[in-house]
Every structure is written in C-alpha cells, then in structure tokens.
Image (cartoon, rainbow, N blue to C red; front, side, top):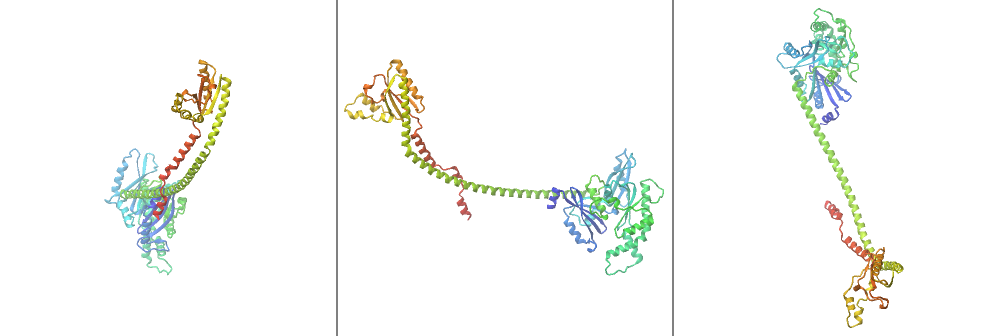
Length: 597
C-alpha cells in the first residue's frame, strides 16, 4: 500500500521488463521518475534448473520471491520472436477504409494461427510513396500471452503492456534520429534467429527461423560426442563451448535462411523478384560468449560489413548493457508518445491492469485518508493541550484577580472609615468657603442695590430655635402656631434677610435682581425667596420696615459630603456582597485533582 501511495503521489514507480525465452527469463528493473526511466537492476532466472551463483542466474524459488517483491509494480512482457508475426503493408491513401478489411484478410491467411483468437495492432510508418500509406502490423495468438502469464506465475501482477521482441528493438531505434539507409538486424537467441530489415529507424520486414544457439549445441554434441572437462570447468562454460564449436557446422544452413529471408523481403516489399545477394550492412545481436563465433560466420558466409551496436544505442540510458536494448525499447514504447510500436496487450489482461491500478489508487487514498485522520487527531490533541495550558494559566490569573479584589474591598472599607472621620472637617471647610463667598456677594448687593442686610445664618442655626416661643409663654399666638406647623426640610445652605428701601414695582424688581445675582454664583446650587411663613423672627423689629423685609434661601451643591458618604457606603456594601461571574464559571480544580488521584 505504501508503494501504491508513492506511485500516486510521486509517480516514482518501478517498471519490470521481462523477456522470456523458453524456460529462462531476463528481467530488467527500471524506475520511472520525472526525469524519465532509469535503469536500476538486471536479473536472469532459469525455471527448470538450480540457481547458478557464479553466473548470477536464479532458480524457481528466487523467481517467485522476485515476483512477490514486485507484485505492486508495473510489468511489461516482451514476446519472443517465434510467437509473433510482423509485416509491413502499404495501401492507397485515397481508400483509408480498406485497412481493416486487409487486416481481417491477412489474419485468415496467416499460416499457423488456426482458429484461435488473434491480438493485432498497427502503427503508421513512413512511406516512400506520398500517394500510399504504410503501416507496420504485428499479430500474435492471445493464448501465447496467457501461457507466459501462467508459466511464469504472473496472475497477480499488473501487466501494463505486451510488445513483440522485434517491436521492442525498433522502439529503441526510434529515439536515435541519426539512423538512415537500409540495413539488416540479426538477433540470435537460443530458439532461433530473427531477421529484421530496417529503413532508417523503422522496420519494414521481420521473419524468424529456428536456427540458433540450441541447434549449434545439439549439432556439436552429435558430431563430437562427450567432452572431457576438468573439475574447475562450470556447466555453463561447457554449454558456451559446445555452441561455439557447433556454429561453424550450421553456418551454411544459417546463412542460407538469412538469404532466403532477404529474397522474400525484396519480393514482398520492394516487388523485386530477381535473386540478388545481401549487400546492406548487418548488426548482429547475440550473447557475449558466442558473439565472436556468429560474427565470423557472417563475415565468411555472407561477406557483408558488420556495424557496431554502439553506433545505434550509444546514448540510450546510463548503465544499459548490450543485451538490455530490447528492454529499454519496451519501456520507450510503453511510456513515450513519440515512440509508436504495436501493442499486443489483450483486452482481458488490460482490464486486469486497469482494475489493479484502480485498486492501488483506492488503497492509496485509504492510506492517505488514514494519514490525514492521524494528522488531524495529532493536531487536535496538540490544540487541546494548548487550550488546557491556557485554561490553567487563566485560572491562575483569576485567582490572582480574586485576591486583588478582596484586598480592594478591605482598602475600600478603610477609605470609608477614614472619610467618615474627615467628613465634619470637610463640611465645615466647605461651609466656611461658601460663607466667605456670600459675604463678598453681599458687598456687591449693598453697592449696587438700594437695600441693607439684617441677617446671614446657615439653615441649621436659622431653624434651630423653632420651639423657643412655645416654652416662653403659656398662651399660643399665631406666630407660635406658624413656628410649630411650618417646619421645613433643611438643606446645606444659608438664609439671607434684607430690607429694601424702594417701594412698589421698583422693590419687587430689586428683589428679583438680588435673587438672580445669587443664582448665578458658582458656589450656590440654588437661590430663591423664602416664603413669609417659613421665616423666623430672629432680627430685632427696630431694624425692619414692614412690607419691605424679605428672606432669601441659598442652597449649596447637592453633591455634598453627605451624598458622597452615602454613595461610598452603598458602593462598599454592594462590593462586599457581589459574586464575580468568573467564580461561578471556574472549575473546581481541587475536586477534579483529588478524584483523579
């Protein structure tokens, strides 16, 4: 699953390219990266024998372990020459619909295919005639692909493509634009030899005949008999020796089949039915231990020039070996749009590949979802820890605030007590200041008004003797009745009695001017004429003139020391009984801690 997630997110996946040949298989592991495919490893396995550590050849058990290790990777199968047929076909460009009909006709006429299901694919090839379209077509029987899957135990792997051996070699050449002209490729394998005629980098003819390494070994065994070998000789070295010794004995037959393929190519493709010798250069592909022997047969029997394989695949990929060019071509054919060769992937195998990829994607998404959920949970746990830490710090701050709040209540109570101690002094100070201001105002009234003042007293002193007249005589008078019944609510202030000299309207105007003048003073809250029934007879009647004697009540500011004291008492009482909101919301840390313990 981790490999599948890596494939989805990073697209760095392994491509397993296998080239089966009889009971052996050559596997090259490529890694697809953003820079392109890179060669990683190469393995050889033989399924009908024991592993050969000296030749780095694994056995059946090693092959099974290799398949299990790469079960989640993408696989490409290179079909052997003997199970595929490739041909070059040109058609009239004005009749594009005839391609499918020709394919069906050619499929029925192919020898050896029988009635089994055929897998066919084609790609457009360069045509020397602009009026005709050329196609390179490859066929194979579908059961050949399934036989390889069954024989090599590949049922559970994802096969992304199947290509013919000749097409894989041609795909590697298409990435080399410098190749030009007509030339022949001979690919010698154990089961036989493939002859592929190229025009530049594109194949035009392909055939196979069963003369190769196995026939050379059998020919040497029949003619020479058993070979006596020393203890140190290995079995594989003996096989290579037999092949090298048998090649000269089959060289004539081998070159005859090559010339036959060349004549068939000229007759079918070039429409030249006259016999002609092979003249184009040849590239020979074979196993390194027997390559010199096959090259000698080409020079002696065909008498043509041999091209170096490095001239074609010199810049293919880093660490690529000469016997891995077909593997590299299969990778290019599968994953590069510019390289086009027929694909022989059956629909049933393709459906399994698609299902495998969908399964990998779903498993990768599931793993990604699990990883995302774990990340979310870790973030939630971390966030919860941070919140708990913040909560603990806030609780400590709340406790500190509570302590300061309680200390503030104690300070407030002390301030209230101290204020009550200083309240009489403050009140006397304010009254003295107001009295001085009133005396200054009286000087102004005396200067600007036609009147004289006969009394200035604070309200407390002015109304202090309300009941004196009732204690001096035994009989009641109207004035005594007034003194007893017309009590007033005293405020902090003063009473001013004055006598006006004017009469009538002028007197009333002067009285109004005096009241207005006193009201405008900042040190007084209000000034008003005192009704006659609330005046007290404190002034000698000899100083008064009837109907010209008036009293003015002057009140000080309402926010005096008494009001301030009342508000201070109220604030202290409310603060003492107030329960802050945070006390009701604060968790009981001590109880939770004890319960956890």
